[in-house]
Length: 256
Image 1 (cartoon, rainbow, N blue to C red):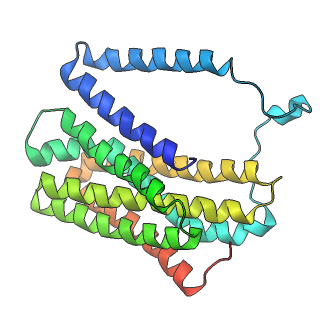
Image 2 (cartoon, rainbow, N blue to C red; image 1 turned 135 degrees about the horizontal axis):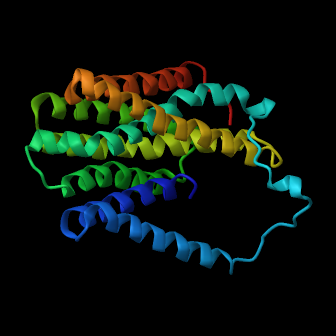
């Protein structure tokens, strides 16, 4: 569920936001009001959830990030896969809506929601499909499918076809979900019980930095180079990172 819920949440958020922005009143405000009410409801619900562990001291509230000795080699090998998966997500959530609207010559903002749903929805579904596969197999398959999806996506951008772009998004999304799940399970399986919380924190630090930083750089680059060239260059970088992890795993598999 650690891999399913983030992608499923992004898919639902993209769908709901697209609907609200396109069809509801006050599109720049209503979506944030809906989020605020949802967060307040979740916070209230959390007050009713019983604590599952015994608190030992206030020090337990201090966040810890770390990679144990047994996981370090695997972490280095899996990092390109983690970065590729989440950088791809950052591309779609930042430039994806503008990209498909430009290609389709449309002002329908629901198209922006559709491309996010295509990527993240496929990611969530793929996690459910491959959840019983061995971690190494899942990561290799994920990287392979992600590369294929990126190639189809770049083809859609190059020929100016929204349909091909959406098809590539679904394929890339399947690689995103399964690649991240495989890397996540590969790493966690190597860690001792006392190391897993810090390791999971480290995984998500890498993931969310990859989610945010390249997207910001791409946004700046798009203003200078143009949206389509920036997208193709970004996608090529993502494919290269996925290929790096794929080759590393095939040449010298790291143990789970």
